[in-house]
Image 1 (cartoon, rainbow, N blue to C red):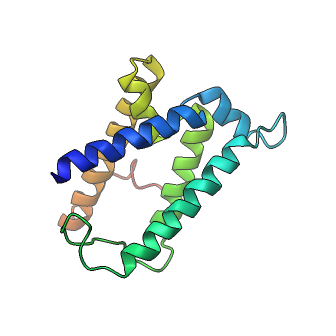
Image 2: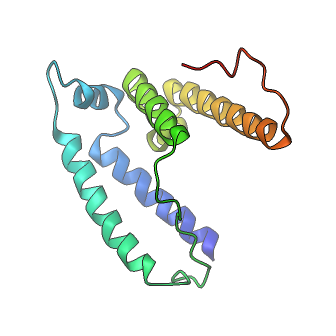
Length: 151
Protein backbone atom coordinates (compact mmCIF):
# COMPACT_ATOMS: atom_id res chain seq x y z
CA UNK A 1 0.00 0.00 0.00
CA UNK A 2 2.82 2.54 0.68
CA UNK A 3 3.95 2.13 -2.94
CA UNK A 4 0.48 3.11 -4.17
CA UNK A 5 0.48 6.24 -2.00
CA UNK A 6 3.98 7.14 -3.20
CA UNK A 7 2.75 6.79 -6.79
CA UNK A 8 -0.34 8.89 -6.03
CA UNK A 9 1.75 11.62 -4.37
CA UNK A 10 4.09 11.65 -7.39
CA UNK A 11 1.15 11.90 -9.76
CA UNK A 12 -0.35 14.83 -7.84
CA UNK A 13 3.08 16.51 -7.71
CA UNK A 14 3.55 16.05 -11.46
CA UNK A 15 0.11 17.46 -12.23
CA UNK A 16 0.90 20.44 -9.99
CA UNK A 17 4.16 21.02 -11.87
CA UNK A 18 2.30 20.97 -15.18
CA UNK A 19 -0.46 23.31 -14.02
CA UNK A 20 1.99 25.78 -12.43
CA UNK A 21 4.16 25.97 -15.55
CA UNK A 22 7.29 24.67 -13.81
CA UNK A 23 7.80 22.11 -16.59
CA UNK A 24 8.17 24.93 -19.12
CA UNK A 25 11.88 25.87 -19.24
CA UNK A 26 11.11 29.25 -20.84
CA UNK A 27 8.79 30.15 -17.94
CA UNK A 28 11.40 29.08 -15.38
CA UNK A 29 14.16 31.07 -17.10
CA UNK A 30 11.78 34.06 -17.21
CA UNK A 31 11.40 33.71 -13.44
CA UNK A 32 15.18 33.57 -12.97
CA UNK A 33 15.83 36.55 -15.29
CA UNK A 34 15.91 39.27 -12.63
CA UNK A 35 17.70 41.73 -14.91
CA UNK A 36 15.37 41.35 -17.90
CA UNK A 37 11.67 40.62 -18.28
CA UNK A 38 11.14 38.97 -14.91
CA UNK A 39 8.08 36.71 -14.56
CA UNK A 40 7.19 36.56 -10.83
CA UNK A 41 4.40 33.98 -11.21
CA UNK A 42 6.55 31.05 -10.06
CA UNK A 43 7.34 32.93 -6.84
CA UNK A 44 3.69 32.50 -5.88
CA UNK A 45 3.88 28.79 -6.72
CA UNK A 46 7.00 28.42 -4.54
CA UNK A 47 5.48 30.42 -1.69
CA UNK A 48 2.42 28.17 -1.74
CA UNK A 49 4.59 25.05 -1.81
CA UNK A 50 6.70 26.30 1.10
CA UNK A 51 3.58 27.06 3.14
CA UNK A 52 2.11 23.60 2.54
CA UNK A 53 5.46 21.92 3.31
CA UNK A 54 5.89 23.96 6.51
CA UNK A 55 2.51 22.75 7.80
CA UNK A 56 3.38 19.18 6.81
CA UNK A 57 6.77 19.27 8.53
CA UNK A 58 5.29 20.81 11.67
CA UNK A 59 2.76 17.98 11.81
CA UNK A 60 5.39 15.34 10.99
CA UNK A 61 7.72 16.49 13.80
CA UNK A 62 5.08 15.55 16.37
CA UNK A 63 4.93 11.94 15.16
CA UNK A 64 7.20 8.91 15.32
CA UNK A 65 5.29 7.04 12.61
CA UNK A 66 3.74 8.17 9.32
CA UNK A 67 0.02 7.93 8.63
CA UNK A 68 0.80 4.63 6.86
CA UNK A 69 2.51 3.29 9.99
CA UNK A 70 6.06 3.60 8.63
CA UNK A 71 8.87 5.15 10.71
CA UNK A 72 9.40 8.89 10.29
CA UNK A 73 12.78 9.73 8.75
CA UNK A 74 13.13 13.49 9.00
CA UNK A 75 16.44 15.30 8.40
CA UNK A 76 18.51 15.68 11.55
CA UNK A 77 21.26 18.01 10.33
CA UNK A 78 20.98 21.55 11.67
CA UNK A 79 24.14 23.19 10.31
CA UNK A 80 25.31 24.33 6.90
CA UNK A 81 28.24 22.38 5.47
CA UNK A 82 30.52 23.24 2.57
CA UNK A 83 29.12 20.38 0.51
CA UNK A 84 25.55 21.69 0.99
CA UNK A 85 26.57 25.12 -0.30
CA UNK A 86 28.45 23.62 -3.28
CA UNK A 87 25.53 21.32 -4.09
CA UNK A 88 23.09 24.22 -3.88
CA UNK A 89 25.26 26.30 -6.21
CA UNK A 90 25.47 23.44 -8.72
CA UNK A 91 21.71 22.90 -8.50
CA UNK A 92 21.04 26.61 -9.09
CA UNK A 93 23.51 26.77 -11.95
CA UNK A 94 21.91 23.79 -13.67
CA UNK A 95 18.43 25.17 -13.05
CA UNK A 96 19.40 28.55 -14.47
CA UNK A 97 21.11 27.14 -17.55
CA UNK A 98 18.51 24.52 -18.44
CA UNK A 99 15.36 25.97 -16.89
CA UNK A 100 14.67 22.47 -15.55
CA UNK A 101 15.09 20.87 -12.13
CA UNK A 102 14.71 17.20 -11.10
CA UNK A 103 10.93 17.04 -10.59
CA UNK A 104 9.97 18.73 -13.86
CA UNK A 105 12.65 16.76 -15.72
CA UNK A 106 10.84 13.53 -14.84
CA UNK A 107 7.54 15.01 -16.03
CA UNK A 108 9.22 16.07 -19.30
CA UNK A 109 10.79 12.62 -19.66
CA UNK A 110 7.40 10.97 -19.14
CA UNK A 111 5.91 13.29 -21.77
CA UNK A 112 8.59 12.18 -24.24
CA UNK A 113 10.27 15.58 -24.47
CA UNK A 114 13.96 15.29 -25.43
CA UNK A 115 15.19 18.03 -23.06
CA UNK A 116 13.78 16.03 -20.16
CA UNK A 117 15.65 12.90 -21.26
CA UNK A 118 18.95 14.78 -21.63
CA UNK A 119 18.49 16.38 -18.20
CA UNK A 120 17.61 13.07 -16.51
CA UNK A 121 20.65 11.37 -18.04
CA UNK A 122 22.92 14.23 -16.89
CA UNK A 123 21.30 14.09 -13.44
CA UNK A 124 21.89 10.33 -13.16
CA UNK A 125 25.53 10.74 -14.27
CA UNK A 126 25.99 13.44 -11.61
CA UNK A 127 24.39 11.24 -8.94
CA UNK A 128 26.63 8.35 -9.97
CA UNK A 129 29.73 10.55 -9.81
CA UNK A 130 28.73 11.76 -6.35
CA UNK A 131 28.25 8.18 -5.10
CA UNK A 132 31.61 7.14 -6.58
CA UNK A 133 33.37 10.08 -4.89
CA UNK A 134 31.68 9.27 -1.56
CA UNK A 135 32.80 5.61 -1.79
CA UNK A 136 36.35 6.72 -2.55
CA UNK A 137 36.30 9.05 0.43
CA UNK A 138 34.96 6.34 2.79
CA UNK A 139 37.59 3.86 1.63
CA UNK A 140 40.31 6.42 2.10
CA UNK A 141 41.32 5.95 -1.53
CA UNK A 142 42.99 8.89 -3.17
CA UNK A 143 40.65 10.76 -5.48
CA UNK A 144 42.34 11.68 -8.77
CA UNK A 145 43.70 15.22 -8.56
CA UNK A 146 41.72 16.26 -11.63
CA UNK A 147 38.46 15.52 -9.71
CA UNK A 148 39.56 16.99 -6.37
CA UNK A 149 40.75 20.42 -7.51
CA UNK A 150 39.43 23.31 -5.40
CA UNK A 151 37.14 25.70 -7.25
